[in-house]
Length: 249
Ligand code: PGA
Image 1 (cartoon, rainbow, N blue to C red):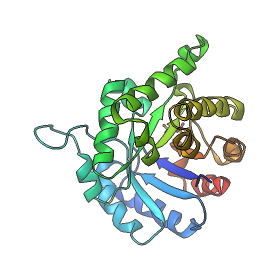
Image 2 (cartoon, helix red, strand yellow; image 1 turned 60 degrees about the vertical axis):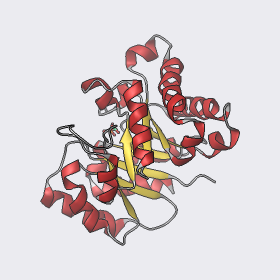
Image 3 (spheres, protein in one colour; image 1 turned 90 degrees about the vertical axis):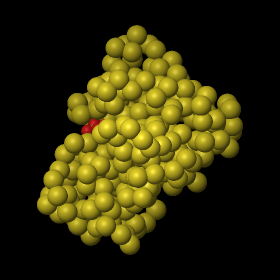
Image 4 (cartoon, protein in one colour; image 1 turned 45 degrees about the vertical axis):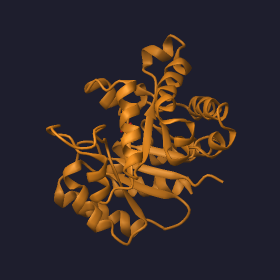
């Protein structure tokens, strides 16, 4: 049985006072039941949000992580620092990082390894653009993104990771993949991993991301290979996010 996960990716939103109110409402509303809840604030607020989450069932995650261990990397934050600040998870390979900050498959793989080496659970994002979907190369793209990590980290590393399928055309656009489109991509990812190691493929937790809202969450999470969601915009509203979490349990 795979335990469902709902992770909120705040992106570059929120300031101290509103973060505190949002987190307070989440703590009040979260039932500590079967769904694992993670929130990923901007780096600068991790420590403070982590303090607020202390002794709750909600976990802290980072939105990115540096591939290097330490040294002269101005502006970067290492995995060990994130762990030290209270993070349990780190998102790697988000499409905004890939597209806007030119993070390629090789760098994403190194970030994945760096996160695990410091004891963080990577949430590895993969997904195709609209142009790639229209060209019929969705599986090639996702397969390539996944294989790049497996080549460097090994398939066994996926036992300590989460994978998020996030079609780029569905992120922040209000366009959600249909439950069948999500299921097809998830089944492909699970099969790709299971071909190397059946146990790890079977146990791998796969999140769908891309315009998840309370109104579509239950249908998406109802698919057999969808184990929860990576939620952007809708994670900034406590009620909405809590309803999404409830849909995952
Ligand atoms: P969205 O973002 O829910 O706002 O589409 C998802 C994500 O980028 O993780």
